[in-house]
Image 1 (spheres, helix red, strand yellow):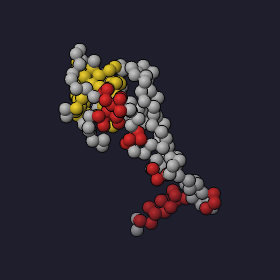
Image 2 (cartoon, one colour; image 1 turned 90 degrees about the vertical axis):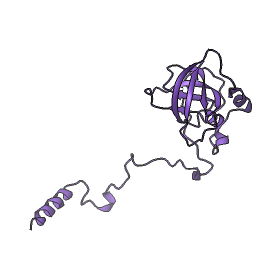
Image 3 (cartoon, one colour; image 1 turned 60 degrees about the vertical axis):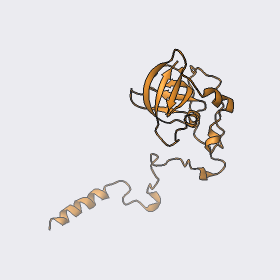
Image 4 (cartoon, helix red, strand yellow; image 1 turned 120 degrees about the vertical axis):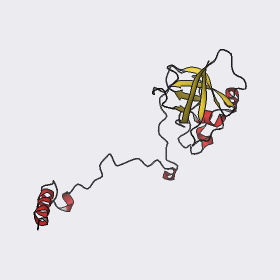
Amino acid sequence: MKKYPAIAVLWATAACAPGFMAPVEQQDVSTPAAIITPDLSPSRGPGFAPPVRPVLDLNQTRPDFPPPPPPTARTVEDFDTTTAEDRQAAVVTAPQSGERRLGTTIASLGSPTDPGIWFKTPLVTAVTQGRIEYEGNSVAVELRPSGGAAGSGSQISLAAMRLIEAPLTGLPEVVVYAN
């Protein structure tokens, strides 16, 4: 018999809620803005545009980076706008004199809309030139500070990830050197 007072209390509480007894035309049935997310799937058609490229740091050491990918980019080749000459120049066959080892870090793929051969890491505090190694492959990169805490991991550009031959969906452990 104690169920009835509890049900009456719940019914009375619900009845006090705004819009409980309002006609259907007056009830607010819209989805909250926090739940609405943009549809970024390629099925949107040719008018689909990827997110805007992040603003690059004006202190970068290589202002001659390749152009950003076109808004219609869909494939890895479309997003990687580095030239064959850029890729060839980035491949390092021997360690450079005067470089110092900064450490190892786990890297994930950075924004594919950010062009060039770069590596964002908490191992540096200023933009500088450097090199990364992964499973015998070595690539010259622009080292950019990530602003993260030490040990928080790094991000690698699409072009650099391809040059070290790491899986694009993987988390390679790379050795980082600064010039």
